[in-house]
Image 1: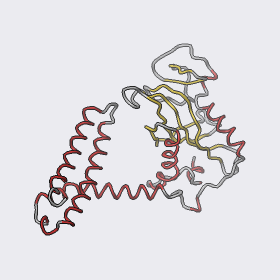
Image 2 (image 1 turned 120 degrees about the vertical axis):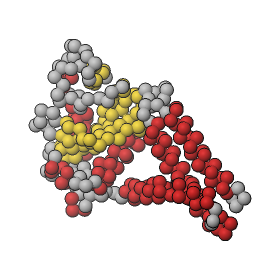
Image 3 (image 1 turned 90 degrees about the vertical axis):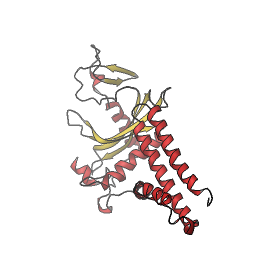
Image 4 (image 1 turned 60 degrees about the horizontal axis):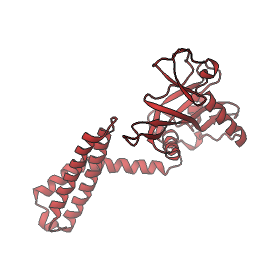
Length: 269
């Protein structure tokens, strides 16, 4: 390390640049930028820590070398920012919830009722197709019912739109939240299973994406999707964990927002 330390450090920087260029020219469906950012982040952290170690083990010989300090200054801002962010994220993940104890949701529902309600809401996800058969196909919206996907524009105000350019497979209610008396469903987490041609490009593959929703059976549109979503998961468990992380922990750290397991959120909805 002492003899070839500078070369190794510059080699780390070179590898990061080469990998970033590879992502720019080879990644599809808009993922290139994200992968480049991830590559630079990882490169900065590795380069910063490696430079610190190099300085410590050969302090007298390298403390005055401009090239060493150049690499340290170059990698420092993004590395410190990234490590701070990663530390906060890890702390958040191992926390059960960020909802204050006095506002934590604690309604208990009979397990059998809960499972039946999950099935019932899954059937309501695209309920209007069940009421009116599609007669005039169009290219404006994808709808799913009973194992088939339709293109239609017919009175679909209550339906949930599917993402574009994916083949819908199933909807899964991951979690439900009830009113204080446990009689009414008021919110939940929905996961959709789709075939996405850009997943495992170029062959395509199964992708799971999820969103939170609020529910009011008395509204014309009973299911209203919320703005935060998770995408890119290749299995249900991963999608569920990420979805719960956002809606039960992360959102509660945003200004003027509450987690879904916060009674203030449920009362407001």
